[in-house]
Image 1 (tube, rainbow, N blue to C red):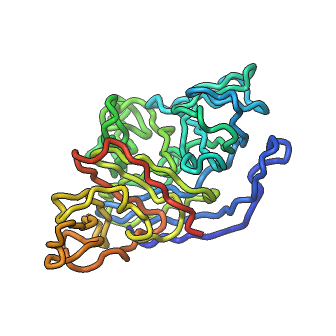
Image 2 (cartoon, rainbow, N blue to C red):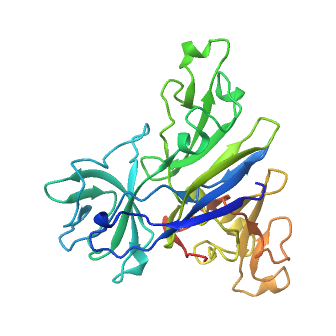
Length: 358
């Protein structure tokens, strides 16, 4: 993907004073980032600019299991209990500070239900040990939010998937395994599409449902296959995350984002301690990075406790096309995403922490 541009506008208050509930909240930088989708190839993009914070609070001592209690809560019944077309939660809680357990900071919890009378909220994971943690509620960004409800970005569209640009997302199946899904914007000037599901955002296996409200997580990447010949630019406004991120990595393929709108390198991502490494790419987890031609270059972290690698290229980040040169400075551009393929022998789930780089 081509170079991105980040423009910082200002630092604005996130909340009105009446909504703080005794939580100390600093201002957050806002601005926009320009992303380029390469014509005639693949682009791996992320959405690091976040929507406005809707609520902030502190997790109370009576929270238990997946039930979060906030004694000062002001939400109404099921105010944040909304599902997207794939039945995923539209709103989420993010842990922003926790003096008792820093490892919880950055954790994203989907909101399942809200109860006004009990100041409670059911979320997607256990919060029993998060007493005193600060959190905020945001709405996930969506396909329509990023690309335009009416495809104002200008992606190629037609009466079917094979006539359109394609957006790939990775979700998970019922067993928690990664699962690819494909989306496109369906139009047809001849009117045939009216018989096949009309105009709008569609999923490859469902051409009649409107998928403009499909959610995009802050740590999720998108892979765009641009069949149109020209480059396109997306301008994403929003706020910038000011706490670390926590991203789950499953066995198999993971399409993930760097959550901050700045350039990074393979080395600065600090992924090597989370990935399987060995004497060759065949023994290691693999990172796929989009190159200048719109294809993929594969990287892995090479190690060998026997010492044989001293003769074969040593220890460190390597590419599959050059196993002796240090690839640690390989750039991951702001607003980019990477694909991580974790080997079947890897631990089923690990969490990658990425610290605030500024």
